[in-house]
Image 1: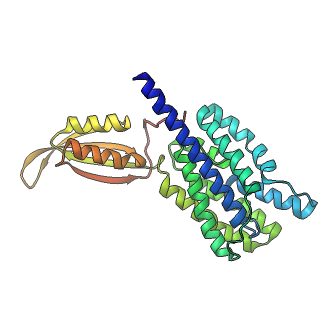
Image 2: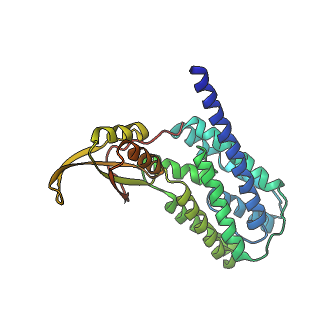
Image 3: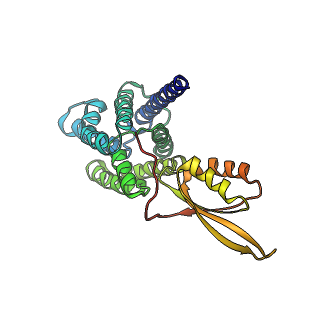
Amino acid sequence: MKKRNNLRLLGREAWHIVCIIFAAAIYGFSINNFLHGSGLLSGGFTGISLLGQHMLQQFAGINLPLSAIYIPLNAVPALLAFKFIGKRFTIYSLIMIVLSSTFADIIPNFHLTNDILLCSVFGGIINGTAIAICLLSNATSGGADFISIFISEKYGKDAWNYIFAGNVVVLVCSGILFGWRGAMYSIILQYCSTMIIQMLYKRYQKQTMMIITEKPQKVYEVIKECTNHDGTLFKGVGLYKGKERNMIYSVVSSDEIRMVVAKIKLADPGAFINIVKSEEVMGNFYRRPNN
């Protein structure tokens, strides 16, 4: 049994690394084929690195590879992540940081389109998809994401909109230095990227479940086993038949909802489930650690 569990764990780790390599490749492809040459900036430390690269080329005539700026820039956030978020999470993220910036330097530009609007939309979609794959593989793409994860872990809030606001400041600097056309289209790119991340990665989004069931203990055991979250049992009366009813109230992460609902339906096929999006939860709420 122990050997089987070790093999399963090893297989999961290998799969995460494969996903991270794939995410790094498409992230690097996006940077070189949709951002370079279009005057666009992506979000976070990648955008800061690209801005620094453009400034060195424009004002000092120095052509540095993106990796030479991006990797050192992530050193301090990586140390903070190692201390406060998790060792494995940080190691995976460092793999992503090194590979994505290296791929951005070596993947050729295939000149797919010169339309800046298409570049901003598809660049944002691909960037957001790459970052979401990273996050689902227990990693992140760099400094701003480290900060976002730290905020989300500490305060239990989805912080991507705050990161988007910070990115706008970088774009204002770009607009002042290199013109507003690319900076304004970059906002579209970052908006698309943020929407894709929020759609695919739901760890810090929460939903409230209200379950009316005749098997409250079995339903509670499902919630506890699947999510490690608790529940509260309310007793009431169904007005149509005048019979006593049990309602379990529980809050779970959005990425757990589908699995929990499926198992509740197996435990009690007659359960009535109402799911409501929770904007903010105060109090003790279990979060799976980023190991």
